[in-house]
Length: 225
Image (cartoon, rainbow, N blue to C red):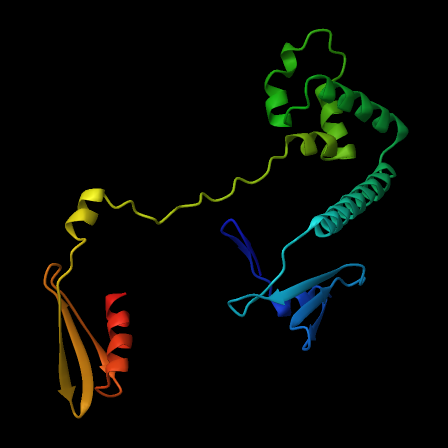
């Protein structure tokens, strides 16, 4: 778990195992070691004051993530090129040349969506590219990757709502003085400490192991909290 600025990422050992990550617990050092499938990067999770194991990402972690993202992009581009080469074999040289002219016109008018482009296609001046060639270009080359990357935007994160409520100073001043009455109550030989606040009309109780004074202080702290 990593927590900073109210942001927490909780990792599941089961999910990490399915992804191929390896986990190891060092009993003497009280920490978990989590390594990627290639064992090229190791993350140390140390125990905090709450007994939870947390890791704070550093520059080395961010460089590792950046490298993985670049590798993923290169793999996707390689798959796209292989798919495009396979698709080109299904068209003739004349159709490919017509598709290139259609794709050139498509980029010349800022690469709009085909449904939008069709609306004002007839308004283009000095245009010698028929509409069929533009449709053919879409069939041959498919989705334009460079245009899609330029128009992608990050997903807007959820709004953080603060649940803190500002209490007016007048209410704090009015309720700064509290009058409390306490008494003991016995039910089947069980001792209970009762307390009632006269100003707020609030009543509560806590069980006591015995009537010893040390238990009274603990119960009062619990009731007044």
